Amino acid sequence: MDYTLLAPTYDDRYAVYGLDGIQRSLIDLVESERPEDVLETGCVSGFWLALLLGRAAHLFGVDYSISMLQLAGQRALGARLTR
Image (cartoon, rainbow, N blue to C red; front, side):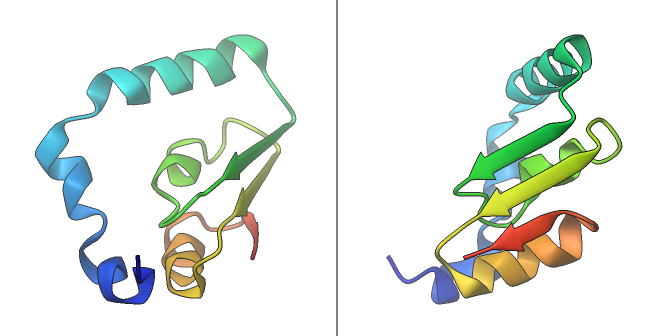
């Protein structure tokens, strides 16, 4: 899969599929466990990292696609991202 081509429309899927239950479960988990660090492997566009902004002291994201990491950097401000 060439994520460079997919990157511009990747986040459209979140509006289409209504992932409210997943969002609520992730927030509930982080708020109950209160981790200082959160690592998302395969963070793609940073959608889930952005959801956790302010809920953990340190957010980290890893992804193979530079295009996706660029999107994640715009969305999940302050998260430490790496390829």
